[in-house]
Amino acid sequence: MKQELRLVKIDSNYCDYLRKYDSKVPYNFDRKRNRPFVGVLFEVNGCKYFAPLASPKTKYLKMHNSIDFFKLKNGELGAINFNNMIPVTLNNVIMLELLEDNKTKEERIYIKMLKEQLYFDCK
Image (cartoon, rainbow, N blue to C red; front, side):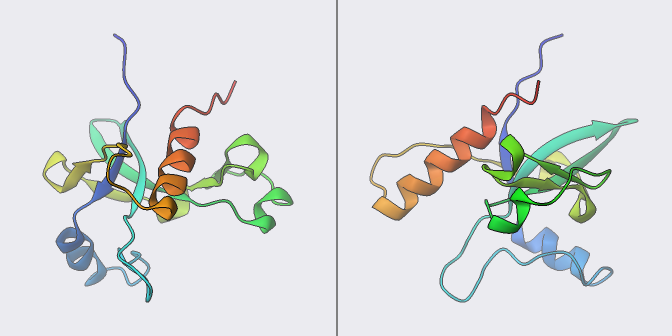
């Protein structure tokens, strides 16, 4: 069975709910703008999980892959933080559309990075 990799974001209300029980669940925003909590969706033993993607940072170039951290293209495209994964249901997941129409230059740059992360070949 062929599976398609999709980038998703998580409903803010669900993150707020989880934060009542785990203070480490990230917020969907920062002081400057509302940023999506974007990551990969996967399933283990019938349970769905969301692991957030991290934008590229210089420190990732020196870090090593581990059980809870996976660099994309040696850190150049960011990383997947499995240590911050959360359980989800499809009701909490919002499929992310990577359309560039009517976007600012900053948004188009961000969408380009997300596309590179999505199509990264880890072989």
